[in-house]
Length: 153
Length: 405
Image 1 (cartoon, rainbow over the protein chains, first blue to last red):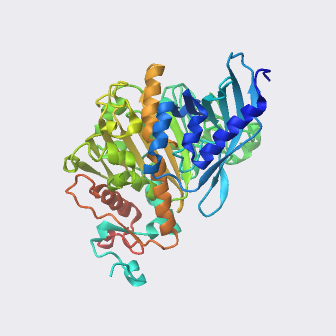
Image 2 (cartoon, each protein chain N blue to C red):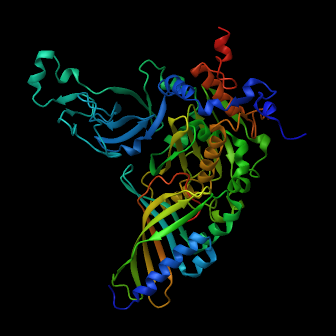
Image 3 (spheres, chains in turn purple, red):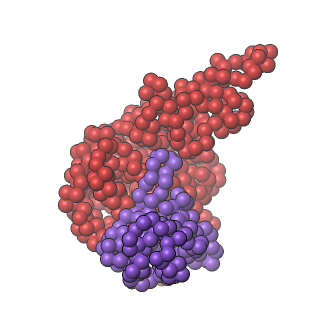
């Protein structure tokens, strides 16, 4: 682990990003992200024998996506992102650290039943000075996510 | 009075029987069995694209209504399809969704097969000498396979008419975008949904449902006059439309699209939009720069497998591919603005029909074959009736054409 970062602060930031998305607080989520933030969902495909990109947005694209959500027929129920303890990887970046977080996303339906929606890993890049999320790549292991989602994981 | 009584609700709609469908069609296990036997085991269906099998011995597993199949490219370059079951004890032979198998070896007793389906090895074969079987008798069950415009079609029926006859020219309008240049599948996903397979495919055939999608309301409904949208019934249940347009600047999240970000597909401009619905459950949709192919496979009366592919130009630069994937993902894919809404609609209809809440669906829009006419739905159910021998409006009795015989 790097000596230049506060693991508790890193854990706190990642948890807050997840809770903001859970709560539909997209402004709150974006407030935790840097101006050059990039979000991607990458899915390894054994069918095609290569990685697929299912979502790829810069901050502006993500803002447009969030802004349009109220007009869309968005899935009912609620997604909850449950994070396992993160692994902070010191990869030699001067002012940022790479952080890996296993995440399980649960879907709680309108009738109250909950089920696993997706299993994934967050690969985050976090600034050590500004404590902002600079990039998040969601490596999605679950390839059948039912009716899908308008909202990033 | 506006609301209806139980009797009024359950009474058949007062319109021609060709213009509505009974709810039993989505829920009855016997009808489902009739569909498997009369439709899915008889027709040609596209199951993958040639780019998924680029090298000799490349294979791809296929789910045919629960029956495991695999396509494999042989030494002669020909793509063949087989039932994915060992001739010995019936064990499934190949298990990874895709791979390369110069020799197909059953894990169970080490029987081996080649890419032409021949049995090439039986461990300690001498013990079968008394019953007179050897490798020559133990080949795999081959499934008829043809390739058209890069699509690999199969039929389980050895006596089915040729693919060309079945298609009735429905794919002619896609010759340029599908085969004008080599394409490559860059997106594949599958979703098992709680819905009858037809409820999914109706989201492709029912153009009136454009109103459900905000992206279509903003990019499509105003892009050209409704009466200029010509719909085509090709026969055999296939239908579609070409010459459509999309105005991508109508949706805020599609910034840049339609401004020459990436070369369009052959025969298209970047605003062009065309689609064809192939009977029984495939839609091919081209949006200028990218193609989506989705295929639905019944897994039961109220469960269906939806498979989606995204295709772009093979061999293009990483930068062009990234744009093309973005164009695909804007509408389609599990995080698209469009597909999750269609999947929601399919499940919502199925939920209401499942226990008899909803009784009929109406497919009665008449717009002289333009705009949002239900001609595509009616073409589908005409073929459905011919192949199942049942009336979609009253499936308890035979279809009208058959009853008259």
